[in-house]
Image (cartoon, rainbow over all chains, first blue to last red):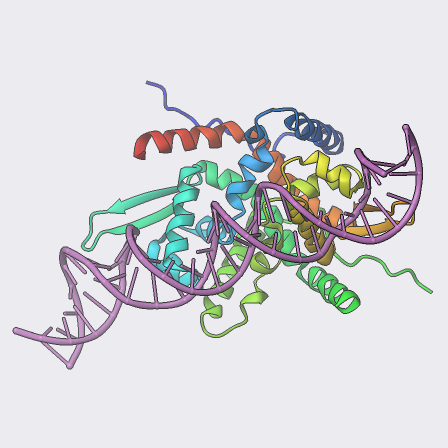
Length: 154
Length: 154
DNA sequence: TAAAGGCGGTCTCAAAAAGAGACCAGCACT
DNA sequence: AGTGCTGGTCTCTTTTTGAGACCGCCTTTA
């Protein structure tokens, strides 16, 4: 019996003309938005359906942590000290439901629970990581923009 | 007088060993998280401070639209038909404050307002776009994961 | 032997954020 | 004189988030 392999694809692994396909993708996306106003199903927009799930306050942070190594519930809690237990539970549940995170219970006493990234999660984090790197490199630029804006308009 | 040039940097334009720097970045990031529990300033974490601003329900969608071309307020409203006027105003305000979006009022009658990406916004969208592309390519995989999860656990 | 603490959560209640929809001034067109 | 378009603001309700108490079970400490 053949092993069921992952079917998701990586971004940017194939060598294609990036700029051209970018423009095409954007145009088709916006046509989808427009068609939605005529009664289409809004959940067919990947930006909403997929990225929405990563929009939570804690999702990116937990993905970044789990991308480094698997962690247990309490370890994550200590790693991100200002998350409430409630939101940690819920965020991990959502990430698990979307297929990014694997949850495994070990029959120790008391039982311990380990969270780790799935292949899909690692694939997604490859893209998310670009954004995280950008945030680190341009943190100051964003802060300057905010300061300038606040100074100008109060 | 020299023209003041943008100082932000692009991700991935320089040729560096991607995997190694990735691991280093992740480790240092997690050490920052840990040090925050000892009284550090939590806003120094770029993942929180920068990506938080993009976490809104509508930010990614509006960035994608404005990456294609500048749009006016009413045009954006029609493009994203289920956004409320209130959230459109507020999200554009936030994006403008963070330096991604430029707002320009034209003295027509009635006055019209055009929103466009700044250089910083285009730079950031370069990274965000990776995530959007991933979402498009892997939309089905995520949907399958959700369906399987819901079927298993109700 | 009793008390305290780690484990991974759930439950309740208050605060913050988002959504729905009315309303606004100014001008053009009919 | 009425309607519509411009880009919003204001209020009210619903949803989401946050703070923190509580839970049973087990181990360690005093």
